[in-house]
Length: 284
Image 1 (cartoon, rainbow, N blue to C red):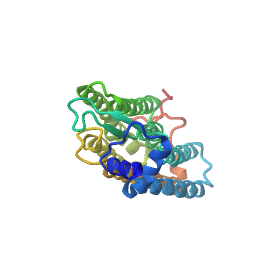
Image 2: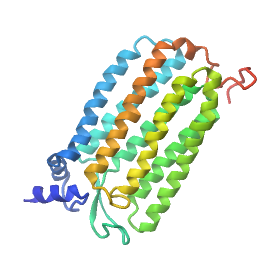
Image 3: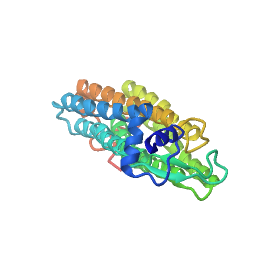
Image 4: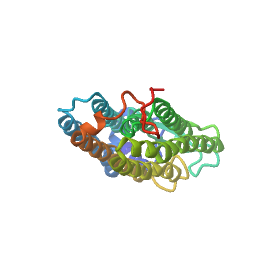
């Protein structure tokens, strides 16, 4: 009886506070739509790890190897995170504050996703920055802004004292995101032209920007925000974007690097990009 009730509540993103981790795990498994969004990601992450190991087996250039390591970390982090989610380990039940559409109700909050994003998205940016031939200053700025975006997004999801403050955190997170977008669209796009990697960089840039824009949109529409979409639909939205923004992204990147290792090796040493005048400046 408890399991049936839990499934009904999970469909709406609402879970009784007194549920144990075992009961949460069972309730997730009984919600086919929710469970499939997690298990499919675990399977694809595992397959991606094996495929990427094969693709990068012959890389010899240090920069190409570093891009490979950064790309490999993406599915490694993801398989760990999704295992935590599907087991109920990284899921909490928070009472929504007054003003929220589900005010006073315990809402399923998969905070483990933020842990994934805080660890995996910096790896994506490191790979992109290396591909573009970016300098250390831009790379550091992009990564720290990205981590700030994820941490403040987590704060938005976990704040239960005030509905307004949830949205304040959301706006702060979006502000960090704007910094990341600027570096991707302006700074690194120009660096990639100089480095000779513009074609593949622009493909990956568009893929990243378009999909990353979807995360704050679905947060706002999901149970954590306006509660327009239920938890299972939101979970599939996140999982679908993860599949493309992480595994497909890493596949396209590693395939290009494996085929163009000489181009990567010919970039300026370290993390310093070639200057606009054609000279190679010292690293920052």
